[in-house]
Image 1 (spheres, one colour):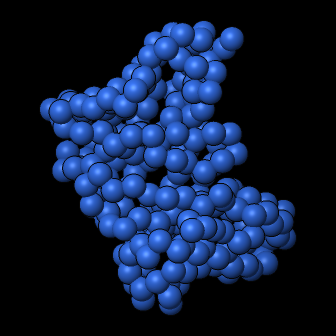
Image 2 (spheres, chains in turn blue, orange):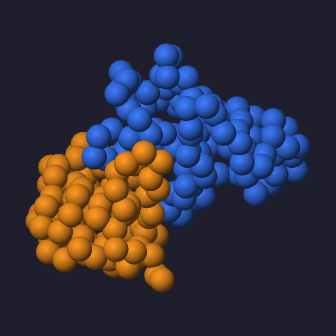
Length: 108
Length: 114
């Protein structure tokens, strides 16, 4: 089993739609979790950290379920500018483990 | 602040040639990382460093060497390039590896080995 797995995608959704991405991780000792966004041919950038109680930043909501070792990202009211690859990242001691990413295309 | 910079941005090598990729950060970060990104595989950690003078192996270290002689610089070396090392290489830095800590990435180096 890979350390971090994500929905394979791609997700093609119309503008204004709500879309959810799922991520599972295998290291039960992990303490830190993140969602990064990566635009085509660019470097990854932090979208949001994932807190134990769940957290929201505008149209984005992240949830963590430690018992199931599961992380989710919900995007409401999708914009064309949300089109990107979303990377689930899990802390693994002194370094970070990246999932393969889920590509989102928001269509006009 | 420039953040994290990488040199060069693009490079084409022939099999067996060597090269060094330079990563520099001006944020006084302790931790630095080298990743490679291949289609459909996400970012994989090659080597990392938790401070000046220290390095450690990541998930895919074979064929690469690194050095962290100065806190702000992290060098990635390919001694004898192979076509399997064709990839996009990203450097990143963070202040620690602690909870809720953010990694900052450089713009990447696109390497092709013929």
